[in-house]
Amino acid sequence: MPLLRDGAKPGRPRLMFAYRDVQRVVRDDRWKLIRYPQVDKARLFDLRDDPQEATNLADRPGQAARVRALAALLEKEQKRCGDTAPLTVPRPEHAEWTPPVEGNTPRGGRGKEQPGRSVRVPSSLAP
Image (cartoon, rainbow, N blue to C red):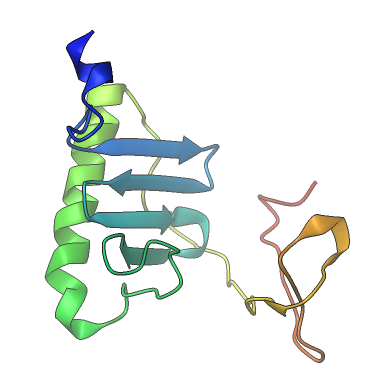
């Protein structure tokens, strides 16, 4: 299989990922868009300049056209794959979350919650 032997050549120009009704992702060789329909949030990462996905660019005005283009690509890929999950919901839940700070977390995470900050898990994600 020549495709598997040539590591410099991407196997696919784009990929789509899904996790239940919670998350949809599309990425190409440079950009990654993550969509959270249940809380009406998006995250955009420049994988070339930020391979660790540390800086969310989705809310930056200069990236609005890119977010729209990648969202359209995500919808196209969903249709191609037969994924009927919506990218928006009529009544999204409020999402409160503070990224962890460096240190230890329960269950082997990479950080710990900041004191005085709440984490609210949408009911659709609760166990």
